[in-house]
Image (cartoon, rainbow, N blue to C red):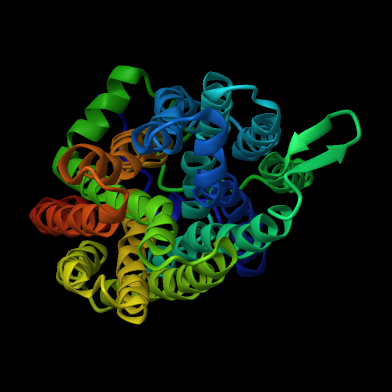
Amino acid sequence: MTAPVATPSALPAAPSPTYAWYTVFVLTICYTLAFIDRQILGLMIGPIKAEFAISDTQVGLLGGFAFSVFYSIVSLPLGRLVDRVGRWRIIGLGVLFWSVMTMTCAVARGYPGLFLARMGVGVGEATLAPAAVSAISDSFPNDKLGSAMSVYGIGIYLGSGLALLLGGAVVASLAQTPLVTLPLFGDVASWRVIFLVVGLPGVIVGLWVLTLREPPRRKAILTQEGALAVLTIRQVIAEIGMRRGAVAGIAIGLMFQAIALYAYMLWSPEMLRRSFGWSAQSTGLVMGAIVLIGGTAGMLTGGRLSDRGLRSGHRDAALWVATVSSVVGFLVFATLLSALGSANATAGILFVGVFLLAMPAGSCYAAAQMVLPNQVRGQAMALILLVANFGGLTLGPLLPALLNDYLFVSDAALGRSLAITLALTTLSAAVVFDTARRPYRRHHHELNA
């Protein structure tokens, strides 16, 4: 049996608003770099397939399973560390590690080597989300937490958009030079240089993170003497189990949302190239702008709506936002099947679609923190991310590839494969988010009454 949760009068003071937003700024940069490293692969499918003679399914495994397997496995022990030790040390070392592993992709001599390097990127990136979400939760009051999480979450779309914008330009310029001579490396294929370029800034940012001040832990379980309680694994499981309806709903809903998002991110650029014959540079410019503007706007809109709903007394506002945006997303992606003959219509649907895909994530991260005591947040977030990312990162890149290779058996059918994946997964997300709203309201009241 654990001690009662700290009452508001016992809570330590949060950091100043200025410093709280400064930490969000730094963490957003980290998240941006993470998604640049994660998504740059999408613009190099062609040269990687050509050099290693692999199929779309193998590309899907490289973009998903290779990253997600260790990302998911190490997230649970990292979540326990987040709840017990300094969060900035965990993040800083993680950023350094994944940046080095990204650069290691440049020297992979075959598909197995590239697969292992992508696993290493996943290990490093597993440090970021549980620690960042926990630290942000201790830095803001509940009615500003959705907005803060959404600003952090725009790193997904800043990173993915920049990967497309910059990557497209770099791929186009390097295409004129199949081989590039580098000091220490000698002659290397031009696509390999991109991994070196995008990995290097993370080394600097990782050191920057180590300079941040740790926020005090708030809404924590206390001992009878008023000190922070150290929970056993059994006690942590019990605390999460008492809130299983809300936690499971958020985790599974985010899993379906992540399947749609990662399918979209990896395969949309390739779909435009195959369907309309666009160059890598044109695809990067269009998709980069779509993801950067549409995704950022959707993430910020979702956070603002969630905070506004919470201030109006709607405890389940975050899950309501997630439900509605997923329903509309299903309707939008279902129309993609009939729009594939027009490049302009397809691009318009992709813009609206990424806006809607972006809306649930930040608000749902915030929602999960609002129903959990402090010493459980990192581990619960790791569990949520285990479900969401293992499912999303594995199935998102893989499902369109499987449909393409084994159902339609045509490279030209990628648009249909992607549209089916996006429509079915957003509909599934809507059902799960809506089901979780009732238990979530009860758990939110218990912790925040």
